[in-house]
Length: 548
Image (cartoon, rainbow, N blue to C red; front, side, top):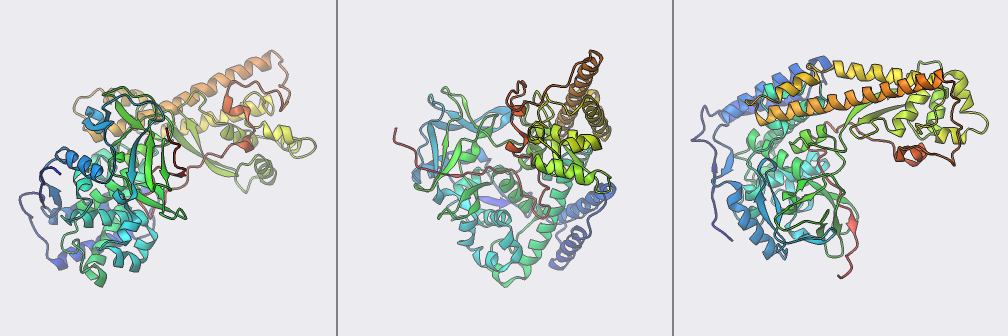
């Protein structure tokens, strides 16, 4: 391998060092503050400010105590590649290169064909929950109930322990990781403030609170648990260290099968995780027969082109929170909209039954999409049922109603002209309310982005804010066009289209299929006990590829 670099404590030395007792008191205060009852929506920001103030006190006391490597990460890339080759990885088709604003990534050193297998990473190179259990951290993982339940947090502590061990087999990988990240955990308070009103803000505030709570919990655990006495973290475990580990895992973790294929576990995949994101399809899987992660090319790549992978169908809010970047031209971007039918409504039972027949819940977080048709068949079906009269509901509950139910998500087959006008009017009102929740307009955001003095974090926050508004505005325009068309059809005396399930000519391909044949859009509530949740690709087990 190449020249080694030493790790050292950051800064020129600790300033205002706290005594162990003082530090324990600060950490206990932080833990108590983060463990109280959840605040109301109007109080979330104030709670964040208070928690952040305590964290900054702790960080000030810990100044100069965090571990950093003397050389920048690019000085360690050759060691990473050499280590990969020693473990049987073929690196002949690519190299690590700097792609400017996109950061480091993989660059093709020869022409690579679409679907060509170009990278295989064996399990022995991966950092997994299982390797954590087999490490010096193992006894603590087996005895602490929190670590037992949160595999990705175990992975974060595993990363810190191996970073502190100069003899760790993962040193080439760990030294190649960024020394800091662009996740919201690294934002200044005024930069987080720019996210107020966005769909990311609740997750950002929860992420910071949960990371602070976990840090306080593990700080006390490392100081008091007998199984922690042998860990290198006992004498040096700073908030900045934990923030780094959390961000490393959150931006890089993926799910792979365990060695016997019976369960799913979290893993960090060296070298492969250098690939940047682009629109496309998942092209990475796990080969259980050869026990390795395998990646095929997403498309044809010419020599010197950047090799991309697809991170998944994530919104830009998810990318910002979990990956630390905003992705332009995100075809999967969306804005969540929560809708439900009140149980106190007189027609609740009838509407619930029609929705059930269509395979839809009575309350759900739907989405407005950035793509050509902002309203999905599922959302359209829900809105139609939501706006039905009693007579219309009866029509969908009795007699030959199967075809009608199946066509609820088909934009070419309205329930009635009045129902269609009601649903688009209702949606327009809801979207208008969402737009009013932002502190600025789309035009103001566009002007702000022209400023040259914006920090990278501030620019990302404003880009996200603007993208969400553009989706909402597009939805408004789409709805207004629908309304104009409806008014014209009614004025012309056009009859309702016949609900013929066998002759659907809708240009929206997705809407051609019955609602029940689609998976309902799921945007599950964030597991707020786990700030690392999200930001991962499921690498399913695959069969060994045929010999070429």
